[in-house]
Length: 100
Image (cartoon, rainbow, N blue to C red; front, side, top):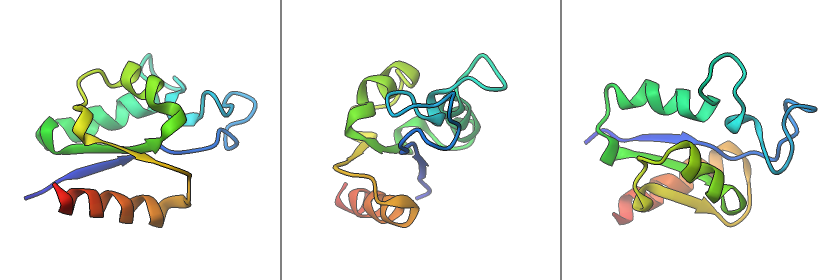
């Protein structure tokens, strides 16, 4: 069964001064009225069922995540206790998917 994982972590340093710790790049609206995170959701939602789309994000960004992706199921939100880069986020998501 195919699943999609959107990585939405980040510390808000890549697009400084636009992004900040409280509003990292995935929540910015740069090229569209929709945020980068919403655009990622739109891309995968067209070919993966929403109940098989998961998002890995930092705990501190949960309110923003729910605001930007109101259709994302709570059991598909994987909150990292601390950011550890891409490989760790992928591994974390894979373990959570195996548990489910």
